[in-house]
Image (cartoon, rainbow over the protein chains, first blue to last red):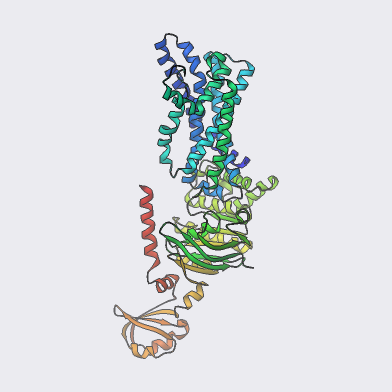
Length: 244
Length: 318
């Protein structure tokens, strides 16, 4: 397991441009959304603070899912064969990959979390640590989802499909950029299915305070943990049936 | 006991039977060649032996372990070099090897000394800290051979180890493999469609075509079965007299030249020439495996091999 983690981490640090863009992109979006939509409401600063937790979740959604789906690339360059032929069990391979990609995604989101200080976010020590924990359990579930999708995909050309049918719905339905209160019923149902909703909600609870959250934090965490466990089961199953 | 045992091994895809009930055994320490055109089922066979593909039916064991029921034990006893490069181009050669060592759970203390040893073997010591992206095709293949050897497997599978490499690099790689076989008691299974290579290197060869084994023997025996050396005579030749010699196995006239199959041509040539009539030109060559393949399947292997790999390249590019 350490071996797989080692590899993911080495590859990640080697691709400096990837590290940079994965942090820069959410920030870029954050300012566009924050100032653009914020200007409509008259008070840009409030809105920016409101969506900040959403953009923390966004780093996880984007980098996490892609990192997971990166396994398709392993298939393409035949590195996956090399891994599958070793005595490692499929379960180990799955968790090793997940841990490796998680390191990438978490480094980025923690970095963004820290940048928040300069954007006027006010953390206490406990809210900072709690945010880190929430991002951790959220990242695990999403990366597993990415790995599962990746294990079914035949070629990297399917990446486009992932971003339009998985990443954007997950992000846009999570309530990252708008409040969930006054939505039509059908959309509310969709937001409740989206696991990212619970991550955003929990982060808001921790960072901004209870009045910004829609659901009890314990419910949020319970849903995220349930999602993690579910993904772990589906993931090990998907890896066991993984053929070349 | 034979280190590899295969009985009626079959792999069926929807409509295509890639490997059709093959059976053979490989002895410990042997260099065993699987020879055949592309698409004959060589790679599929290796994939099944290395547990990456599940056989549709039949039985195979490697180092005494069933490839379906004892996958972990099989994987522990084998090393493999795949047909397509499978090293991570963003990692250095050293990192690729270290990763492999970690995945095989080699003792941490031994890892560096083992890496140095295999790097020396393939002559990559100087470039070990370069990123694999900067390696040439031959270096990359050598790195992957080193990687396959790192955990000292009992059986080493090489799938077309020289495909797409220039002749000089090919020679180098075969040299490494031959040295390896001498230095260790490792059993080596190699697939190729280069006949000269199989001929030089392997103790025994299975010729495989359309998923079936067409012949299995040592290269020398396979050629001997053809009935001796080829002698081609030009001029005004008395074919009928020649046919009466006991050592002339076959005689036919092709494009004005007389093609003979002669046993021990070196010894019998003089006698043959004395009675041949008015000879203008003599050509003698020992049969190669291409002749064997031609004889077994009625087709030349070379052309088909290249044509289908060309088609593969096209499908890949699109």
